[in-house]
Length: 107
Ligand SMILES: [Zn+2]
View 1: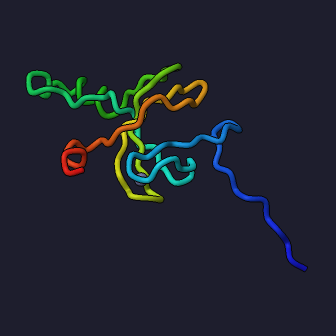
View 2: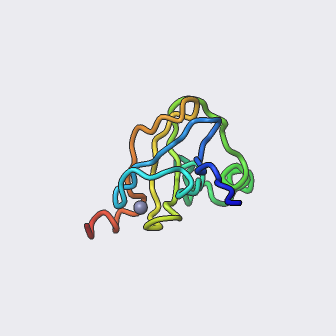
């Protein structure tokens, strides 16, 4: 007896999220890997000697709501790193761009 499986649908909180990769087009969430907050910046040279600054940079993250800018990788596709502006509450995608400026220049 053949057992059919329902198609797998990648969701976040029951919402089928899709990301439009600049190279591959509109793709399902399960092809992407979330890679963190894209707004965090490495400490500048003037503050780099302070261990508390490094602790904040490495370990502390905000827990925002609404629009947020994140790194995602199209791991199941072209493997490009992307900067995605997403509403964390509704999972609506606002903008998607390539994270690597050199990749953009070589288009
Ligand atoms: Zn892609």
